[in-house]
Image (cartoon, rainbow, N blue to C red; front, top):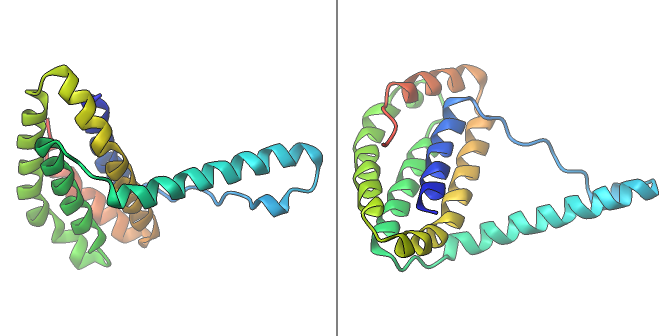
Amino acid sequence: MIRTTLALAAAGLFLVACDAKPAPEVPKPEAAAAPGDADAAATAKAMTDMAAAMSASGANAEIKNPQMKAFVDSYDQMVNVVLTVKDEASAKAIGPQLKPIMAKIEEQSKALDALPESEKAAASMQGMVRIMGATTKMAQHVGSLPPEVQKTLNAELEKIPPPK
């Protein structure tokens, strides 16, 4: 489970590094015209509702495990730094801001790996929603940047070694 959480954290970095684009807009349930479209619209609405619920609860999710709390807090710091990127200059300046945060994330990953398996699973579940929410927020922000800023950001992020 902890590997899943860490993979999600790495996926957040990967999404940014790959110039992630926001997901295509889900059709509104009211737009269903044909009977076959009704199932698709209901499924789309359910997925949208689930994502909204996860986002809402994720921001307030309590993380009791101190190692996971530290990891998620650092991950949030990393996301917040990425969210400050608005132009070429801020994209070029991101590396020095992220390096100390990435070092903390790597250290906290090792602390999480040292936990007994049962604690890892519980900690992973506690942090997963917040990590997924932050990753989505970051990917949407990066996708909204102009292409040249995305390329610069991508180049700068590739210079930072990912956490192990």
